[in-house]
Image (cartoon, rainbow, N blue to C red):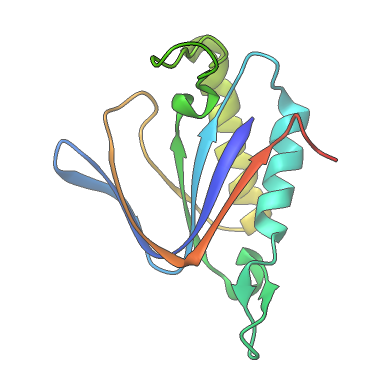
Amino acid sequence: MKAVIQRVSHSSVSINNQIVAQIQSGLLVLIGVEDADNKDDVHWLTSKIVNLRIFPDENEVMNLSLKDIDGEMIIVSQFTLHALTKKGNRPSYIKASKPEIAIPLYESFIKEMEVELGKKVQTGQFGADMKVSLINDGPVTIIIDTKNKE
């Protein structure tokens, strides 16, 4: 699984000009699934994300996690995170999982994230044409790939 984690002061997701998710202080997480991913990847990634110390403490040092600040989260599926760009100028998405594999892992990721945070997270809609808006706070953007855990 690949994730792009962005610390935001505001984020929203719209589908057909209707806002389906909206948060203030927290994280926008773009998540991509490939065929080699499994429940172990879901578990490792959810734990890593909720415990990332990327929010400022009273001294303005990034020392607090999303859990520490009781922040909000939006999770958006993004198959293009697995784009292969080595050959030519048109990306290949051959590594991105088909919906029958990706959807169950994506849904498992959402459920496990809600358990880790102890509250509901907001989401986009798998496979939809979404418009994602955000104010990246910092800016802080972190990329995590479960295939590179070292």
